[in-house]
Amino acid sequence: MARTVTICGLDIGSHTIRVVVAQKRKEHDRFSLVGVGEAPSAGMRKGTVVDNEEATAAIKEALKAAEQASGYKIRSAYVGMSGAHISSRYVKGVVSVSRADQEISRDDIARVLAQAQSIAAPLNKEIIHALPKEYIVDGEAGIHDPLGMHGLRLEAVALVVEGSASVIKNIVGCVEAAGVDVEGLMAAQLAASYAVLSKRQKELGVLLLDIGGTTSGLAAFEEGSMIHAATLPVGSAHITNDIAIGLQAGIDIAETIKTRYGVCRPEQINKKEMIRIPSDDGSEQIDNVSRKEVGQIIEARLDELFELADKELKKISRQVLFPAGVVVIGGGANMTGMAEFAKDRLRLPAHIGAPEHIDGVVDQLAGPQYATAVGLCLMGLEAEEKGGSMGVFRISGRFGERVRRWFKAFLP
Image 1 (cartoon, one colour):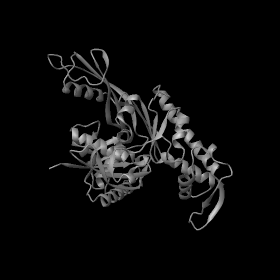
Image 2 (cartoon, one colour):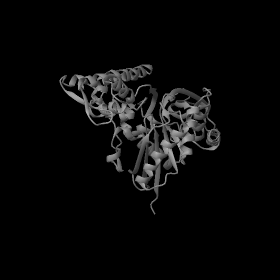
Image 3 (cartoon, helix red, strand yellow):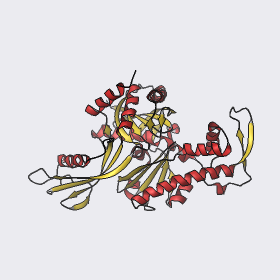
Image 4 (spheres, one colour):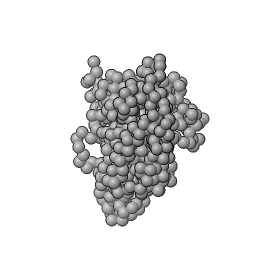
């Protein structure tokens, strides 16, 4: 009998919590999405829990919606994190090859990666991913897989993606308080790459920009692996706030104006084109506003975001050096003209990314805002099938129990 794997991706974004339930039959290459649920990220600010009770209730709401849509009871999930506490750095490990015949074994590879991760890190940080960039055998660099090679000395250079230990504990605690076990944690940028980037794009060199609510995630890939990850302190909610202030409108009205009439390139809008702003209660229309003016407000904030992205690329000397261009995802990617704007500001080919090669409730999940949730399912499925971590930070053993005890201490 064919085995069916059911898996859940829980994307805790800075603006919205999204849950996706997916299934894959063992004999099939593709997988099906069978349910989706979402809820506003109450109790969260910039990816950080600021109210345990509200955050837990928001997670429960999103989970309940996904359970009703899929017909499955969700008991565990792979959880994606974003926010200002996520950062990356390079580490290096060195070990001697253990076998007498000097053949490098899987144990040697595991030891060198563990040694790299053991390098002193701030006490308030927890490693989420340790992603090998290259191995070095007796001084010979640029090796992707040293298994079976011969040498005396094995080195590994890895990109470590880490987050605040207290933020991680809070997120895990809230998810488990919502009645769901955390199978593993993933940085949102890495998870999203599984849904929207091809192997060829990652080999050539590609930039992923995830425009969230209050923060945006950036990840750079080259030669098949992630080489840099960062969080930018600007998101689409800042644009909404700017519109509310500039037009003296309520925040809900500003969001409606942004989604319905917002454009990234105001020079393409006729200055005579006007829009009418509805009143806060929706009972009447007030004030004619230039659509071009709204676009100028959006453009000013996006300029700030893309300047920050360009600064991150300067840190790794990779400006305009991504042959596969930039792929923009997240809720903010839906604004009219975003691909053209990204192409102009970063001087790279650009397009809007969306989950591909999936079956099931595709229409619901075809937008760039679902890239992370779908990617969590894909990455989790791969980890389950291959029996390894696949870079997934597992919540188990002493750390998981420590998190649970820590969180329970704050419960009434």
